[in-house]
Length: 260
Image (cartoon, rainbow, N blue to C red; front, side, top):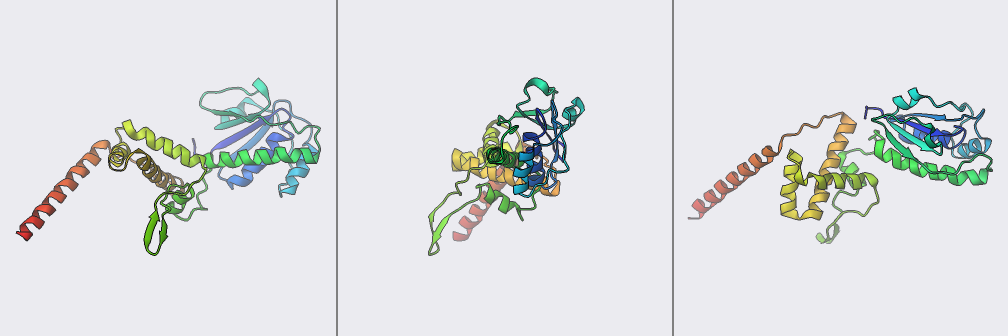
């Protein structure tokens, strides 16, 4: 996916659902996502009840208008989200397609539109967690890992650790990182070698969390600073382990000589 992902929302009339989704994503992403919307059968104007519902949360749709769906729009998008337009949206390889089943606000009053708006807002927040690139709300990679629930959250009283663990959070990004960590078991990469060593030492559950934490830090650096990840290769960890064992052996030998 490019530096700035492009999301296209498509519904039938481009007068309600797709307009709300585009406005909500533009607000939530803070410019980190390019957003467009279109309709397979565009109406002549935006649904007045939809405009009122969006105005209630500070989003002005008065300058927007329904646009027709074109093949060029779909080709330009990275993610295409359809909302009840059936097979009208052309399918091109290399795109991610999602279908959000939502009621059509056409003909509904303001009270009936509000729940649709709120459900779209919830789905948009989930989408931002997947494609958003704005990392400014987390000052450091440690803050980011903590937000994901991948950092230690030990219970301490009187300088004694009463319980060890991580915060319980429901976060799709954290789930994805844990799944990615678990797939490293058979990887011949540097991270794969590290994960297998962690798994041997800590056991699977703790190793998955520890590696997901490490992946979260890598993701943070890549998104915030544009750093490129360069794999060192699985043999690097083996050499480091051998060197560490050699150093430990020499240290034990020196200690033994000193005592004797």
